Length: 63
Image 1 (tube, one colour):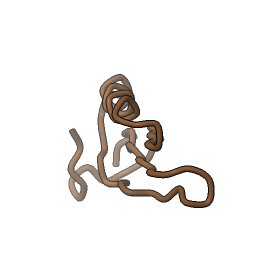
Image 2 (image 1 turned 90 degrees about the vertical axis):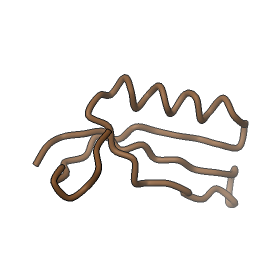
Image 3 (image 1 turned 60 degrees about the vertical axis):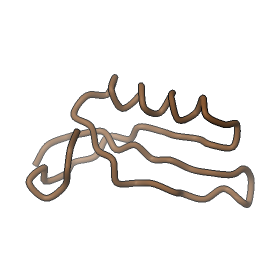
């Protein structure tokens, strides 16, 4: 088990906001934040966060 950072991506605003991705894990917080920022720059209705998680890195792909 390792602590990694999960990139969560949401599309929409208000009541229409929905999660569109929750399966990208990163070992490095700065790398996760870089992807979150690049995604955010694509459109104003896209929000992304990096959340620390404890995962079994033998069972999930970690970048």
